[in-house]
Amino acid sequence: MFKKILKNRDKNGDIIGGDLRSDLWIMDPDGSNQQRLTHFNVPGYPEYYPQGVGVATFNFSPDGNAMAAKIRRLPSKFNEGEEVVIIELEKK
Image (cartoon, rainbow, N blue to C red; front, side):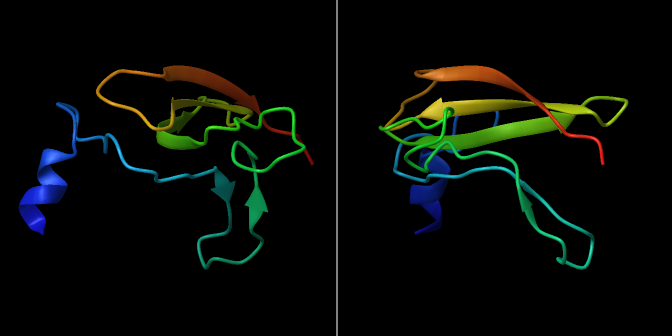
């Protein structure tokens, strides 16, 4: 089982292939105050991808007002269907 997982990773360690669908969430360190940031896999939202999306990696901007995320449209192989999206966060 462990060897199969290693075979399904690209040179950066990101998972490739399969059907792992994911979206971005933020929350407090204790897990409370959960807020969904994206709806890549939820029909009816503007960012919805019918074939499915897996979030590969992300990072916040220095001021904390936005984040960049690398996503992969599914199903995917190494470097296929990748794009970077910018998510602007609402100030409260």
